[in-house]
Image (cartoon, rainbow, N blue to C red; front, side):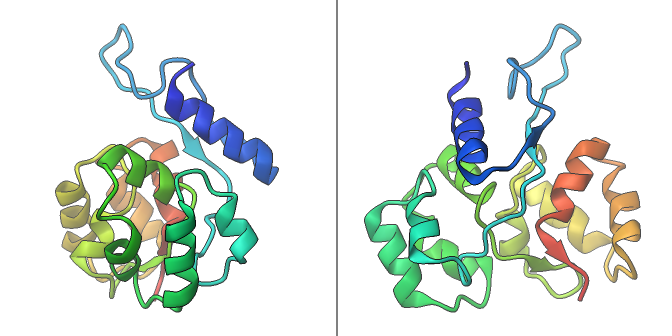
Length: 166
């Protein structure tokens, strides 16, 4: 079983949440050449609101990370949190961590740096460009319609977990 899948299943089981679109081929190319991605239906943990015990239970957060989160709260944005805990991690670790814990980004007011931190099959730069290109969004349906041009319906639903309509 792929390490990322093991991590996500373990966290989902620990948290009591279900995962959707699980596949033994997660993150790998299929015979048709498409990449299969796994998206969680679990609510994201907001590090500004999480208890120390909840943070400690998140795989990928060290004791030092947890202490830095607790002492640095509240974080005004995801990029502010990333500056404290994410810059020392590799991109796979950041993606796995931010698939569980994230500070939601305003669709109409979010920064490019915040958009780039949202886990996606698109490159961070491409994702940020698409978020910004269609602003202002009047509704989450507008957002879903525009993003569905670039990613699957399952990924659009996943992306909605990371944003708010402001």
